[in-house]
Image (cartoon, rainbow, N blue to C red; front, side, top):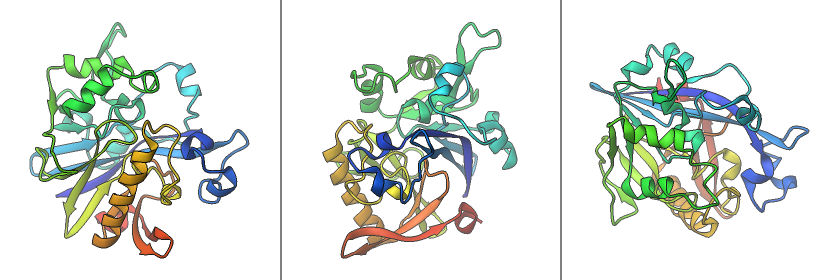
Length: 286
């Protein structure tokens, strides 16, 4: 097995929204804001090469939305999905499976693109199956008013219309062992219903793709929860459970949205679970 970080693009979001009730005087220590209160974020996807299977976890926002849409998210830097794949020796057409941690636009938008004459949409990965789960799919296709702006129909319906949508199994336990894609999945419901956190066994290490359960290093303290989460008290419990497990078992936490820190480990302290070490993906994957 080989693992590759794939940067699908950098963007910015309001720091207050990213940290909910936590005062700026606290969160800006780890996530400094610009003059407009925006903080640096990224869409760091993960590519898993395992035999004949090439699985991409999440896809970033994509590029089919309007300039007005992207204006809200302040793209910065030169990264995109295609150049990042090319830098690792791959092309979109090589991807066999696209795994969505959840279907918010910044995680799924890159899976669908305009067709040639821009009259409709098509799969951006013509040879790939797309993976979600039945509960989250229903949640996303029948959205509540709070999340409706994050579940964009143009990102979701064409996936089903492609005929290549698949669902992972669900489990009565918090963790689904050895899913259909070969890795374990931790189900988290606080951010959105049935978000999936992949837990990948790699060279004797457990690599956890943290998605929106832990967006950045700055979100390690339990109360530091995004304003976007639909059930923040549930996130509180899920973070507590997962971070204690990560500290006990020395998991390596792959951060999807932290623009400046790629992988971390954590440790148990008197103040709770805190940062232990920061690694680059080269440190761990090479």
